[in-house]
Length: 312
Figure 1 (tube, one colour):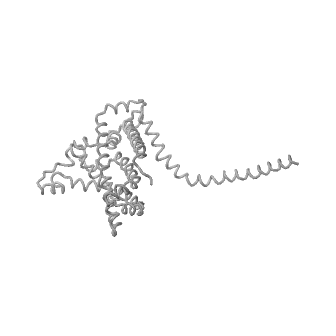
Figure 2 (figure 1 turned 90 degrees about the horizontal axis):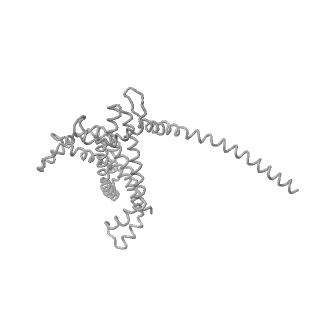
Figure 3 (figure 1 turned 180 degrees about the vertical axis):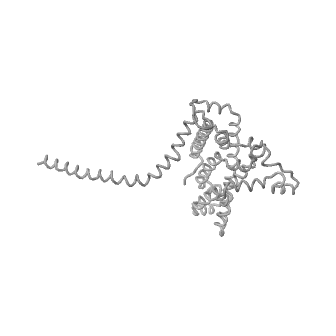
């Protein structure tokens, strides 16, 4: 009797289990169908090009096709290439200067947040450079920085300062481009930081005010720590985009000039090697080094945020 009951129970469980397994397999198909376009796009646009680039970085390519496997020769040539190190230095300079725009963004976002009316108008005005074509931005700033008739030098001349040829002087061209980079990055930073400011509980500000804290003390003791996740997010985005900077150098600097050679970034050097000199193997090695550099810097940022970012 017990054995019969046990057998029936086991049979009942298996009878109930089998349809469930069948429904699980069938219900998974629509899910796969929904994510299939994203998987195909990820494979075709990211994973496959990445694997191809890794392979090409170990080859010597010819202008009209064909590859010869050369091992790590391209990477060894990069280590001994002074132009590569110069491009890497320029990318680092541009990144550091653009990061200096984050404190400016914090101040502007705080001032906009304190305004009672017209907040969206100010946000739109600062966000306009983001939706403007980088080529158009570069052309406008190229005329502003013109050494002979540029608006900047005319303004400096009005107060007795003789401005340099900003985009033609190899010693200052990268700094002129970096100023434009700060101007272009303000919009995104202000929007993100503004959203972070809206998440600061007003109760904490009121409590600190009752304790005798003034506006400056409130900002550094309450607002800034609670804004640190947004600042961290902005810094990660700024570093990644700055290390990939190309369009401003291409548009603002004169092709073939000393300023272009002296101020080229690592992505611009990749463009020169891959699409101008048609050395795809060497260009692929540059791209892989840039990928590893971005991964390393981002990993360091995430490591440091454990001590500097406060998640309240």
